[in-house]
Image 1 (tube, rainbow over the protein chains, first blue to last red):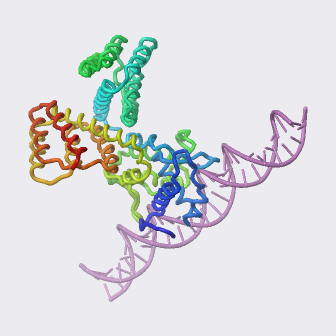
Image 2: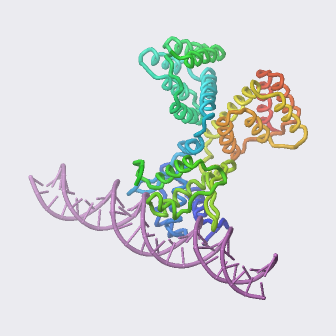
Image 3: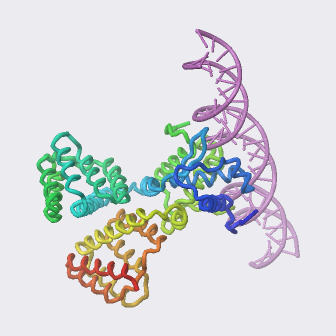
Length: 209
Length: 209
DNA sequence: CAGGCCGCTGTGGTCTGACCACTAGATTTC
DNA sequence: GAAATCTAGTGGTCAGACCACAGCGGCCTG
């Protein structure tokens, strides 16, 4: 009975109990938590209630379960929240425009950060890659998003991009020179020019072949 | 059996099925969804699996259940999930920084859009509101985020903001004059000045008292 | 001794059926 | 007509039963 926190739903109590337990035992990502049956025992609730709590936390990406092995604490970075919200409410028409715009904005933000903080080596490495390989426009910006060391922004970009890709956003042919020009400006820390180059590229793309 | 999406966990299939159902029947916030027993029947899965899916969605704030009445789609805004995650694994320093930075970036993006597209009436209405009421800094930017008519960006802001709020981001005292100055620049379509004002405000806030 | 096979045990995954608590609406009663 | 009552339907919870899978240890075989 311990500390029944007055919330009428058991599974919420379990969530709270788990939180306390994790805190008390200072469990870290990767650590294993007790089995469902033991939790059910320890908290004096049915196993199904424990499972409802665990499933909820799993969908949040806070834990990970492996059949036959157990349940483990997971690194919070990976949470699927945004993704889920996306799959749920992202169906409209107008949303397509918003997607494109948001993608653009985030990419520009990333460019700004990179122009400011990325090391010359990183940028040069990217230039070498541009020269060497064939690639998709997405790949290029994925690398930009990664260079920016803000993991959250990177993650948002990935999500927005994956949705944007399902729509038929024109994939015009952008030439390697354009990318190289952009990178050169980044190397020179010339934020304005870089963004300008980016915007020109956008225009070319939507004009399309 | 329909479209078992190969994910080994039934409850995830149910989540997906629910999503499809909501989309197909174009259910809106406030609408009622079928009872657990009927869903269990319709999807050919046990009721417990349905419940695991529902509990997860509930914790996300996507649905709301009322005992004796049923389960309803919810206008996901103030999901209490936020506090949860906050108390959970959000102590990570790096995550906090990323959150703050991302919030800043998005707010600036919103300012840019508003400076460009918002009508003078909208901005003036906001000025009147600033003058009239007491408000929280979040409220102000919520309104900015809404003015920008990009719903996706607004949604991202809401999420990022709600997470950021759980951390103890200093809530310095920003004066009404600052907000008014910012809005005035927006009214004049002076993007640069507006952002400059915004950044100064940020600095004051973190300097705090 | 080395290598592989086999079965035991523990874990998550799922289903079923049974109650309970509660709500709302129909029904009865005054 | 209004109040009290009953009833069907809904979520909340539990216990118990299987299944599928991973890991471990012991046994057999070469």
